Length: 350
Image 1 (cartoon, rainbow, N blue to C red):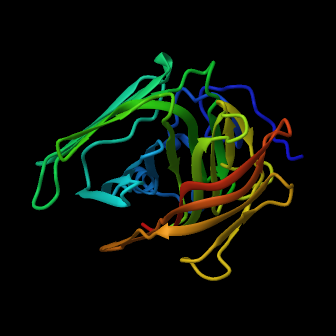
Image 2: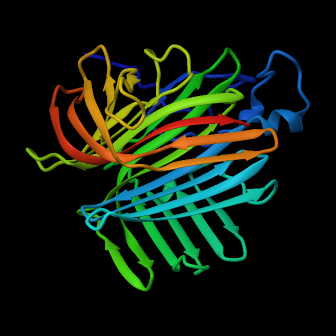
Image 3: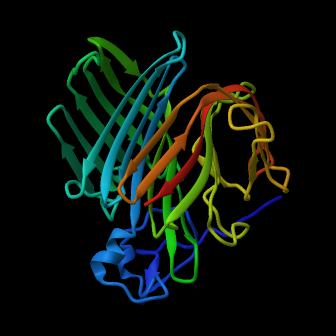
């Protein structure tokens, strides 16, 4: 059975200019990658080094009837907000995207007690990261434009440490160049008002992921991510998994793969995600420890691409069905059958 050392909590993953690689189960007080001394081989001006840091926060909320995915990206050259609301029963989706140049809102260096606000002519949002109060909240208001109805969202994530154990990692691309990730699978409640119709999300039946990322990612970044959540059919327990294959080194020691069962964290081993018959056919997600054996069958295609000067982003993120098996660190087996979730294959050059 795969095991990974969970390190004692620390204030920051950078000490005396050097990054600390590892896995923790508590958020850092602060993550400021500018404190890393000489992350690149050649010395760079501070503003150049700052612009090499990419960061984003992801929010998801899933219940039996609806799926909501929200992404806030700060690529320094530009910022992106993306929201997708999907009606599972009627198979209808609404996607909102907004590209914002250069300056403006910044994502926080701390999740303990911080707020992020952003707005434009027809769109505004507010994120409260209040881990010291066991809650993360997201509020969004999008005005009606052209053929797109208005949309209002308010979500609250219960991230009480007594009920939810997050996974926090610092992973290395090179000796001084790293990425950080905070992931939590938590109960969610809130409301979505779309086209004057109210959707109530109840904590007993709705779950979500809250993720925070920062990193000196490679100029050409490749990552494949698979995630889903639901309730175990045999025990009724809430569970979720969030698995990624990226360019980090020594992933057997530390990686960003995790499984939660009733809030309890199981760090998962590295995986190999293959698409033997192409992107639009079955994906195979497996490890060598016998803890992950999944297939993902895309059902609803989502593609997005953008080119801005020296930047390029291409995302293929279908919704589909997961089947297979996962095993917790205590040996409990979770059988997954036609579990609705998302896969993403991302290429970013920025």
